[in-house]
Picture (cartoon, rainbow, N blue to C red):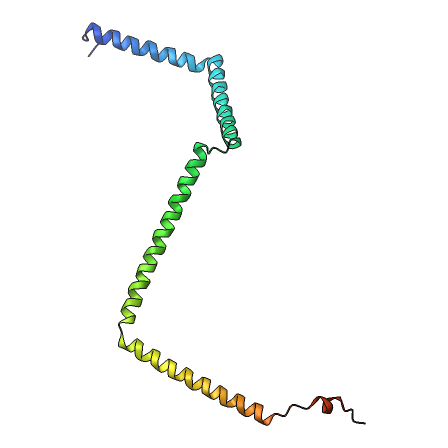
Amino acid sequence: MSMDDKGPRERIAKAGEDAFGKFAQDLLENPLVTNAISRAFEAREKATQAQEVAMGALNIPSAADLERLTRRLRSVSQRLEGIEDSVDRLDERLGDLAGSSDLEARLTRMESRLDQIVGDLAAVRDAVTSTTQVPSSQERLTVHD
């Protein structure tokens, strides 16, 4: 389709687009405009920093502070969910074990064995204390030549 085949509206729109594109290109190539844009961005950054400092001085959180806090809360929340899942699994396992008569029998055997060991230790302690004579203070002070 050639330019002649298009209607006047399409030709004007196309010419306008071309003119606007050339104008934008000329603006971006102009060092004065690029310097002005660069300075505007620098000024925006400095204003943002000044705002954060002022808000910090007033003890008001900045948007960056709130974003960091939000990320930290999400992290803590995920960790807490992991801990809850682990506790649930542990609870299930302990519930399965608590219902087991085998566990009860093992615990009973362990208790009786501990009672036996305590009794044996008491007997050994009694035997050692009855056979060991502690010298009196008079005997300890006597020096033999």
